[in-house]
Image 1 (cartoon, rainbow, N blue to C red):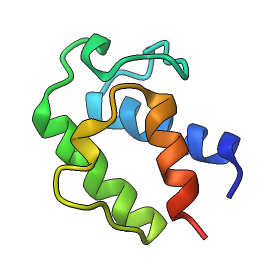
Image 2 (cartoon, rainbow, N blue to C red):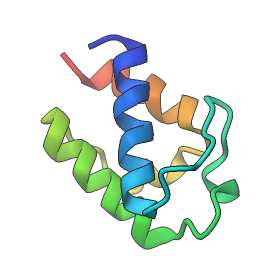
Image 3 (cartoon, rainbow, N blue to C red):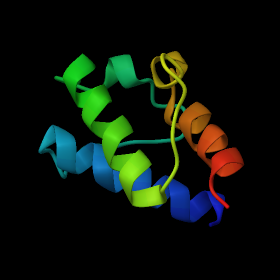
Length: 80
Protein backbone atom coordinates (compact mmCIF):
# COMPACT_ATOMS: atom_id res chain seq x y z
CA UNK A 1 0.00 0.00 0.00
CA UNK A 2 1.40 3.39 -0.95
CA UNK A 3 1.92 6.24 1.46
CA UNK A 4 -0.82 8.21 -0.32
CA UNK A 5 -3.29 5.31 0.07
CA UNK A 6 -2.44 5.07 3.76
CA UNK A 7 -2.87 8.83 4.16
CA UNK A 8 -6.29 8.70 2.51
CA UNK A 9 -7.37 5.84 4.73
CA UNK A 10 -6.12 7.53 7.93
CA UNK A 11 -7.76 10.85 7.09
CA UNK A 12 -11.03 9.17 6.16
CA UNK A 13 -11.07 7.30 9.47
CA UNK A 14 -10.23 10.43 11.49
CA UNK A 15 -13.08 12.33 9.83
CA UNK A 16 -15.45 9.44 10.47
CA UNK A 17 -14.48 9.01 14.11
CA UNK A 18 -14.65 12.75 14.79
CA UNK A 19 -17.94 12.92 12.87
CA UNK A 20 -16.61 15.95 11.00
CA UNK A 21 -16.16 15.57 7.25
CA UNK A 22 -15.06 19.20 6.97
CA UNK A 23 -11.80 18.76 8.88
CA UNK A 24 -8.77 20.15 7.09
CA UNK A 25 -6.03 17.61 7.76
CA UNK A 26 -2.44 17.68 6.52
CA UNK A 27 0.63 15.54 7.12
CA UNK A 28 1.81 17.91 9.84
CA UNK A 29 -1.56 18.07 11.60
CA UNK A 30 -1.01 17.32 15.27
CA UNK A 31 -3.65 15.10 16.85
CA UNK A 32 -3.86 17.56 19.76
CA UNK A 33 -4.92 20.26 17.29
CA UNK A 34 -7.93 18.34 15.98
CA UNK A 35 -10.99 19.93 17.53
CA UNK A 36 -12.75 17.67 20.05
CA UNK A 37 -10.23 14.84 19.53
CA UNK A 38 -9.66 12.87 22.72
CA UNK A 39 -8.08 9.67 23.98
CA UNK A 40 -11.19 7.62 23.18
CA UNK A 41 -10.99 8.76 19.56
CA UNK A 42 -7.33 7.76 19.52
CA UNK A 43 -8.21 4.26 20.75
CA UNK A 44 -10.98 4.00 18.15
CA UNK A 45 -8.57 5.01 15.39
CA UNK A 46 -5.97 2.52 16.58
CA UNK A 47 -8.49 -0.32 16.65
CA UNK A 48 -9.93 0.55 13.23
CA UNK A 49 -6.49 0.69 11.63
CA UNK A 50 -5.43 -2.58 13.22
CA UNK A 51 -8.58 -4.26 11.95
CA UNK A 52 -8.69 -2.80 8.45
CA UNK A 53 -4.95 -3.17 7.77
CA UNK A 54 -4.49 -6.46 9.64
CA UNK A 55 -1.64 -5.07 11.76
CA UNK A 56 -1.00 -4.54 15.45
CA UNK A 57 0.59 -1.86 17.55
CA UNK A 58 2.67 -2.48 20.65
CA UNK A 59 1.18 -1.31 23.95
CA UNK A 60 1.55 2.46 24.16
CA UNK A 61 3.04 2.74 20.68
CA UNK A 62 0.06 4.46 19.10
CA UNK A 63 -0.01 7.22 21.73
CA UNK A 64 3.54 8.22 20.74
CA UNK A 65 2.39 9.50 17.33
CA UNK A 66 1.93 13.26 17.43
CA UNK A 67 1.20 13.97 13.76
CA UNK A 68 -0.60 12.25 10.93
CA UNK A 69 2.76 11.92 9.12
CA UNK A 70 4.32 10.04 12.06
CA UNK A 71 1.41 7.62 12.05
CA UNK A 72 1.53 7.10 8.29
CA UNK A 73 5.30 6.51 8.37
CA UNK A 74 4.81 3.84 11.02
CA UNK A 75 1.96 2.24 9.13
CA UNK A 76 4.11 2.00 6.03
CA UNK A 77 6.60 -0.19 7.95
CA UNK A 78 3.82 -2.44 9.25
CA UNK A 79 1.68 -2.94 6.14
CA UNK A 80 2.90 -5.65 3.80
